[in-house]
Picture 1 (cartoon, rainbow, N blue to C red):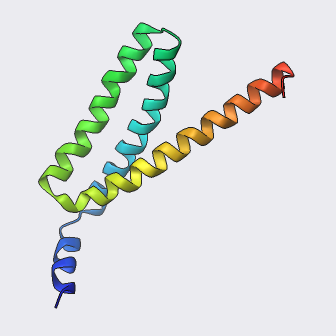
Picture 2: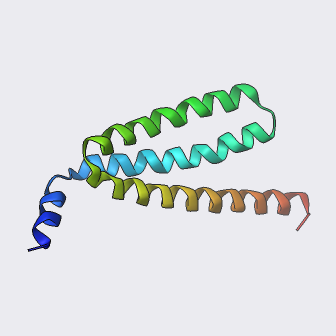
Length: 104
């Protein structure tokens, strides 16, 4: 009978809300990469703007999963995708810059 609580929890998940949570965390993680770069380059206004946007996207996810802990799984998945994707995009951009400048 252990499966019954799992099924009850799954029944509380709204698919569109779950996708919105995942998307907001993916965007938030991508913005963290931009934030770190802006800080590193000393771009005050850009860092402040991106930092504020991070809180908007993060707050949405937090509000949702505090109302229903089942959504934490979608936060974790979104975080993994966002971080992995951000690093892949950064690497791709760096390689393109190096090829354009002839430093590969």
